[in-house]
Amino acid sequence: MLARGRTIVNLNYTQPPEVLVACAKRANLRTIITSKQFETKLAAKGFDVSSLGQVCEIVRMEDLRESISKVEFVRQLLRAKFLPAFWLELVSFKRVKLTDTAAILFSSGSEGTPKGVELSHANMVGNIRQTSTVLNPEGDDVILSTLPLFHAFGLTTTTLMPLVEGIPLVAQPDPTDARAIGKACAKHKVTIMCGTSTFLRMYTQAKSFHPLMLASIRMVVAGAERLRPEVRLGFREKFGLEIYEGYGTTETTPVASVNIPDALLDDYSTVQIGNKHGTVGLCLPGSHFRIVDPDTLQTLPVGEAGLVLIGGTQIMKGYLDDPARTEASVVELDGTRWYRSGDKGRIDTDGFLQILDRYSRFAKVGGEMVSLGSVESALAESGCLAPCDYLAVAIPDPGKGERLALLYCAPQGETAPEPDAMRDKIRQSGIPPLSQPSVCFKVDVMPRLGTGKADYAKAKELALKLSGEG
Image 1 (spheres, rainbow, N blue to C red):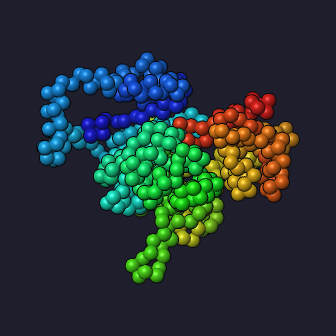
Image 2 (cartoon, helix red, strand yellow):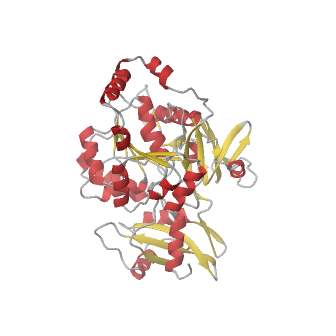
Image 3 (spheres, one colour):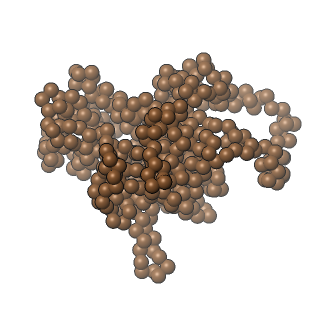
């Protein structure tokens, strides 16, 4: 589709039907290409995509294959195999401008309604080259591709990058199927694995995922959400592998920074530091970070926390048909376009970026601003919630303005403590009182998006409902 000059829109099939239809209409979609087998598997998982047929023509790959004669199939196969690449490009490719929109991806919607993000060919090719330069692929590398294509990380980093750079990739469509992923890694000698903290956590807990399945892995990269300390530790203990945390957003195509392995330089005595725990690494080549005051956009001194601005070739064109929101999110300073990330962070003297939290993920408790991310980090470091999954949210409080609520659930096959017992464990953990949730709710399943990221909007709705205030 990209070679033919088309704009691709990979829809998030885990969204409710009404959201899918709204996204399709907003992107002015005319045709959806899918397969009967895929639709059947989605239906079995409870995802309804049938409503898309009301607004788009649906082309199924099985029907398309039947419409191609054997003679035509063989002719095209021979054409692709034997004709020179320049001839195929001349005849079959459509020339486009680098500034043309290559893809429209709808943001995860973790904090509200998904936004249509327009990414240009320059954005995508630029981020592919940036990421490849940092990963420094070797001749025998094989990349595991499990993240969905509606996610910028899954589309650009684990699908288009290996295709463009000529790196073999192993595709596994379900990132939650730990056993299938483990078998694929072992069978195809995968060397580079990318995933979210949530999915990597599943692999540490799955009994069917044997450590030997990852014997060929040389690098594990986590992105899309904060890497929790217990996931890093669990992965190291089970598989003997370090997780290198990265950072980015759909609006940055998506990679902005990443930690990489330390390297011994040619003098065999100097170590180049590429990884610092608690940070999301250094910005990619051709990218820039700037920490500014969120109100004035004045640059802050090194080490001081503020709004993270991201500049570079991978900054999106803008939000689809939404110039006002684009103008609010992308600013020009000193001749450079910067994306206002909405994250609060700081940069150390070596240039490593530490993300403290989203500005939207702060609770005002008795006049004190409390970071929900710092609450979750404190709970993780104390170990009082292990092995449960958990999420902190803020809900209204008539006396203090807001109070902290904790949603938690046990891994499959295990039982989580009751809320009163959980509150007692937290009180005895030594966590500062301001970071202790005032109410705990045990849930069956943690609210998450199809990408594995926490669904903060639904989590807050659930907490309000369980507290009797929703």
